[in-house]
Length: 427
Ligand code: EPU
Image (cartoon, rainbow, N blue to C red):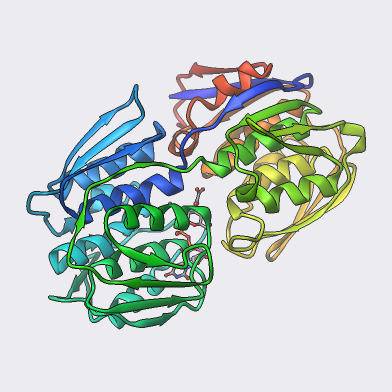
């Protein structure tokens, strides 16, 4: 098993870094490819991540032909054959996001059987909103032996109000609605850039989706969808992670192709801390001076609020800003596990219910730590950059789900970081 080793203390990051296509955009796009009963679909700017390989397997398992040209970052999907209805446990248990095949399979085949996603370290993550919405569109849902079965010869349009703007539920319902009879209105829909990317893609396939990016999405069903060519939107969370890395090392980094609008909630907090953030023609430039960094108060919220997927990395930044910062996590109930690991590095922090209090500006020491989830792994590596001495981060399986060559990109910016093979039983 591999580990990342960081020599901390003197890691001012300087230079430019290139961002990949967004993991959280490409996964639902791959699920949506099975809606195309005519023609092939080509996705460009596809990131090389373990979650993408898993989703490719899910789509292959549904009887579509999937070809991933990794060098070109292109996935080609031919879903013109008979699509099967079952997404088995072996994939859904690997990656919860596989649940987004439920809506497309049901819409295309009239019957879907998808394994229930299991537990998750960052929170309980139910799928009730996905199921309620599909039921409103006429699906009969049953749950047996760890599987959800949904049946509907013809889905029909419906007016759906979501209790919470769930990203996955919005995606599942939008995709199901593209082939339903009549008009579906999704109120209190998620507004993330990845939702907008999916809507653009569906429209390129011949769907009629309006309002993505606002809280009301309207989908008018069509007879069928066809293949298309689409470029995946840039990964705002990977971009944000490098912006934070630059800020916390007193660095000067141009994050190429990062989209200002997508990172607005993060940028506003960086500016409030005293970090210089500027929009340049090639991307976003972040410059900081450690002695100027101020403590801040942050609360995660659905987009356009501060993203929960930047919470862990931002707490790493809070450790270097003098004074007491607070982070309130409102989206997932168990997403502070990285702070327990950071405590092993000397962090003074306290968690009371959904709020973490972080005492910044104290010297941290390198330690052996374990990633607890994807964003936690990035946060621990970033903390290793500023801690004194050596930090060894294990359980990189989480990191590889969402970051492509993270250590190489950091090393190119000047970080003293390596990825090594380690014979360690606990992995
Ligand atoms: N929720 C429900 N019922 C539902 C669906 C969601 O109660 O039916 C709750 C969840 O339990 C959670 C909250 O709503 O507390 C948000 O869940 P949401 O459905 O919005 O999240 P998701 O679709 O499961 C996506 C991203 C996550 C990201 C969240 C929130 C993908 C593949 N995953 O998950 O990404 O944190 O939206 O923005 O798009 C990550 O990349 O590290 C990651 C976890």
